[in-house]
Amino acid sequence: MKIPIPEQSLVLLIGPSGSGKSTLANAHFLPEDVLPGTVDEAKLHDEVARRLKQGTLTVIDGVPLSAESRRHYVTLAREHHIALVAVAMDTPEALCLERNRTRTGSHPSPRALRNQVLQLQNALKGLAKEGIRHVHALTPETVDAVSFEHRPLPSHRQDEHGPFDIIGDIHGCFDELKALLTELGYTVAPRADGAPGYDVGTPAGRKVVFLGDLVDRGPGVTDVLRLSMGMVEAGTALCVPGNHEIKLLKKLRGKDVRVGRGLAMTLEQLEREPSGFSQAVADFIEARSPHYVLDDGLLVVAHAGLKEPMHGRDTPEVRDFALYGETTGEADAYGLPVRADWAQQYRGPATVVYGHTSVPEAEWVNNTVCLDTGCVFGGKLTALRYPEKELVSVPAQRAYWQSRGHAAP
Image (cartoon, rainbow, N blue to C red; front, side, top):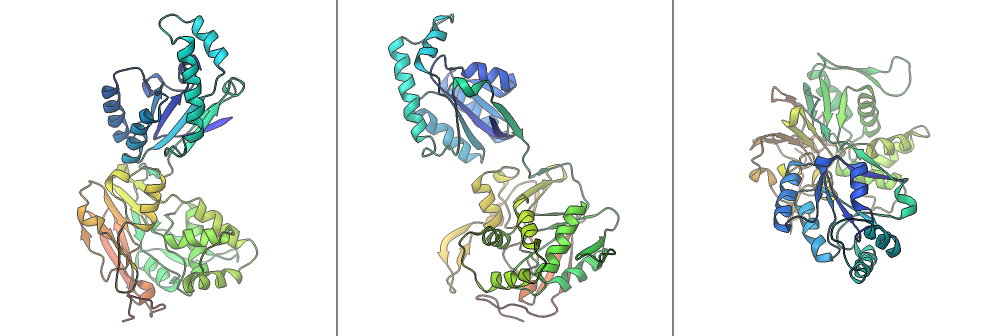
């Protein structure tokens, strides 16, 4: 049995006295990662909060069995955008009692131990409802075969320093993408072997970063996909998904989604492609990280941006923000959700580059910049050269799409 443990996790070891919590902790985690659950509660909470803020793997050996005791850790993990993992030691009462008889020091009475066993059984029924998404129960038969797989977070690419050319929302505007890459010093040509796709020459070791929303609305979706997928495979580009890719992924995986005009255009173009291409597109989207932390943490890229406390974290809340941003709960005159201007409040040291919300011009706001300059609406396609922080744009050849709130120029 293999239990995945993201490198930034809060792991709660839960079980009655004598169930094997400390033995498990000693066998599978470094001593510096483990905090005893028996120390002063206030000091323990402060230490856990400090470690989670730093993103340090933290294992608590012996969390009290009451839901009230766990509630504080659920709150801390949510506040710091850390994965919360519960490992419950489902050990029979008789075995716990036998182990306690051979242990030195204090241990609960048989009656108290029985209460602990009953508390664990009740907890196992409700841990998911408490907000603990990852729950693993171990029995004496499975505990010896268990292993913990410490997984690095896919967003952590601090060792990649660029230089980068970060490109905003393309939405199927392939001609403009070729023009922008050419302006940036790249070469784009059909593959020399005659296979579908493109050979892209990169200048001076530079790397492209695609900010998502490659698909929908424009006429060249499949060409954009072939070029971007090929560059990622060749190691000359990174790509984060946009909300349009995620909806396409759900559709390609057979889920029930509403097919609007933009997605319908993408599906129509995919239908003209050879068998297997749509599957490759779905696999490509699914393998992408919603955001990347680059250049020793000095650069963060995400489709819709990312608040500072979320940088380098991986929870559903972080993924949702990176894909969809934040809304105020209000609707505009067109019935569309009003997006909160998180960049106005941003004070982090990392440069955050994003797209998602179409703007007439890319402008710097508190060390953040939005590169979605509405190419598909007749605006322009924009890139940021990093670390130079130079903005480069090419105009749209025409307006391919008009929707509520966007008038073609």
